[in-house]
Amino acid sequence: MILFFKKTKTQRIFKPLLILIIMGFNQRKFKDSRKKNNPVPEQHVFTRVRTPRQGEVLGIIEQRVGANRMIVKCLDGKQRNCRIPGSLRRGLWIRPGDTVIVKPWEFDAGTRGDVIFKYTPAAIEWLQRKGFLKEVSGEF
Image (tube, rainbow, N blue to C red; front, top):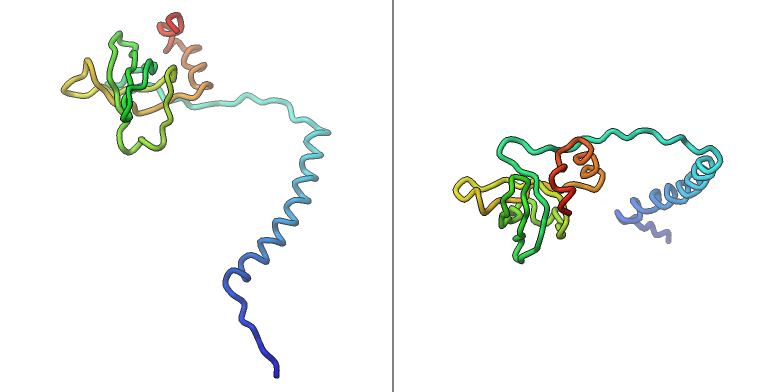
């Protein structure tokens, strides 16, 4: 009596994957050895940096207050109590000293706002070179 076992879905998927992974390790090892022997000259990296649009202000986080709120020192000379909107809450990890874009609220623009974007260190250097953060660089 001959028994035929039907392959399960996971066996059909993982066996070819295992073969590809094993083949991939050999190729990666070979590629890395080429990079070490023939280093590629550094190239200039062009970055796109988001600048504040109409009604938005650059600011630096001074203090976390709690419950997704923080005190931000803005470039227009005002200190705002800002929050992170719900759509960005899990995506933005913010600490004191970070440079951000703040959108002031319509009805209480002088004291409140929303943090809508956080800059990377490379973008902050670009902003300083272009003169966007000239006022703040002396303070911090």
